[in-house]
Image 1 (cartoon, rainbow, N blue to C red):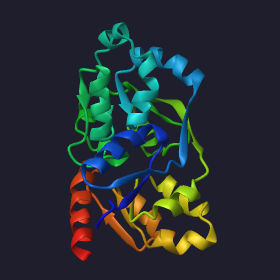
Image 2: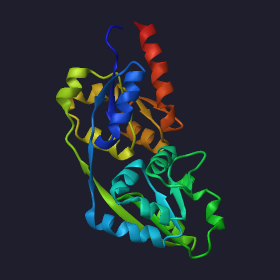
Image 3: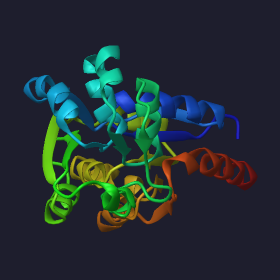
Length: 251
């Protein structure tokens, strides 16, 4: 194989650079293919420092939530926060650590609301304790609804909004990708809703890497036939190396 195979990176634009570097390390050509733009919500961001100071625990839904809040997370604010910072997944935990937070908890297994709800820390918090969930608008309500039913005081800080972007089909046609890395069910639906009829079959035939069963299910529903489910996003590097070797042997 003379030219490296191309991998569509279907993520919000702010999350693509790290995956592009990973592609290059593993012998793939990265093809940035953002379908979502992250727009900060100024009013929600302005109220976040107070919410963080008043909460007994804070739950961060994604690395994007941490990065969006980063301009507000001054040294003095970070030093004044003693409560638990709960991360939905290892990527979010890493972003919190890089931001300077000290007390960070994340599920050992899983990277979704259900994994966070299974953490034993909820039994240790006082009844009626206040919890702030830092997320994007129109996120899943499983986490806040369940915590509310358990007796906690729950507030959601919806500090950013996901806005759809038009896919660059000229780039798709020029690179002829062999596979795609996609990180949400929402993006799977957006991708196929925007696909020209002439490209639908080609898009359905790609190998998709996904790190959650909900994403795999969404891909299956829109006709994708080849889906490799990873247990976490951290497995992507090994999966790309293995597939690169397979493609090389096939040629």
